[in-house]
Length: 322
Image (cartoon, rainbow, N blue to C red; front, side):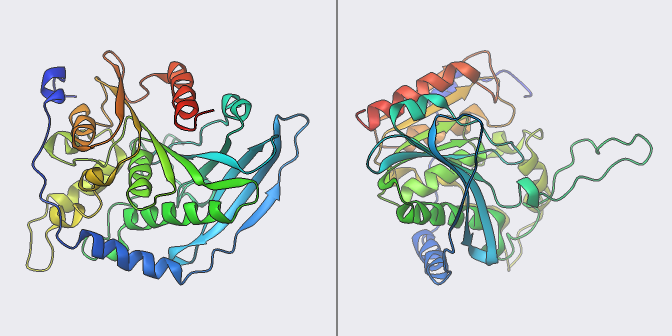
């Protein structure tokens, strides 16, 4: 980060929003397309030597673009339909481990593998001279699509979230009306989107969120792979056909902040070079709900690490009155 981020400046970040007038209409059209696609859900039980869950399943279901979403669903040994925490990892990030604490509370967990990740990830090229993966390589999922918003990667990810919620409604042993969405960095934007457009979501855990208030400060953080991929588009001059920054507003979840009426738990590392603290505070300040933030003054994008796990579990326990 070029200079230290000032807490007071972050705390006062409350940008004026120029949201697209047809934002809801744009998403309503996407939801109509999604409805025409059969879910085709599948479950495969995973057996382990010993595990604390009644069932641990590899699951899959269909989403837009004839794409199959994959995930792991763990349902604890308790009678009745269980509430569930859904985890969305960061762009190019790995899946998080299942947490014993949720199972002990009687809460199910669904860990989603983002579209184009896992076994479907585009393979990184190798430098023929060194035999190592090229530095700062990324698959360029964000490099195209803003010319035609329907093709943009984030549109597909957001519709995948809606499909995930629909999948849970059909899952045996899951209470589809008691869902908490938990996202890490880019995954947090997915969580916000899901809560904005589904009343089945009862709480949000947003760890160092980004894709919320994409301004010059956030765009300056070139360590963030999606920013590197987007930069060539954002540096293009607007033409009669497309204004890239205006197109991006359809996907920036700060424009959905006012829709959030459920409790939200944020984390923020003041030295974060992936998710700019000002962007995190901008989203936080625009939400009108029960909201709280864990601030880590001397940490970056991994703010909180193991310490945050128990805070998250306590938040889930509170929201679900367990």
